[in-house]
Image (cartoon, rainbow, N blue to C red; front, side, top):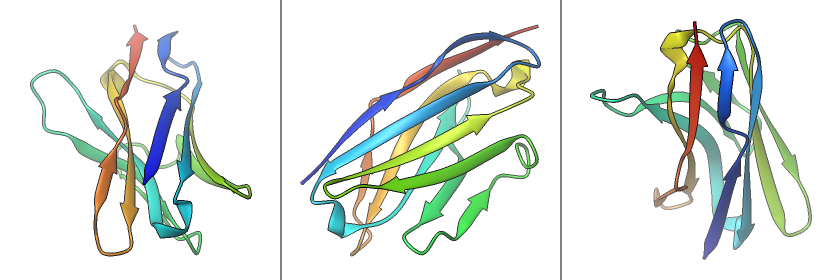
Length: 118
């Protein structure tokens, strides 16, 4: 099993920055990719960024050039970071850590809120 712990959300003014972290522990050898999705009120959940085991990244067009995803491996944990710069009010959402395991099993974190004030 894989356990996920998210952190880093909060309130920030437009133009500011935040860094989200998601720590995966447990059976991390089963992880193919980790990433972040977000869901704003009344909207569908959407992919923000994803990084695979071989460091291939996918970044949504809406955040390209502003958000960066990176990964740090330790012996028993994998941490994925989402650095969010030049934040806009439209970035306001609940952000969810996603883990895709080999075999296409998907795990979700509980979510962390990000609020960008204008």
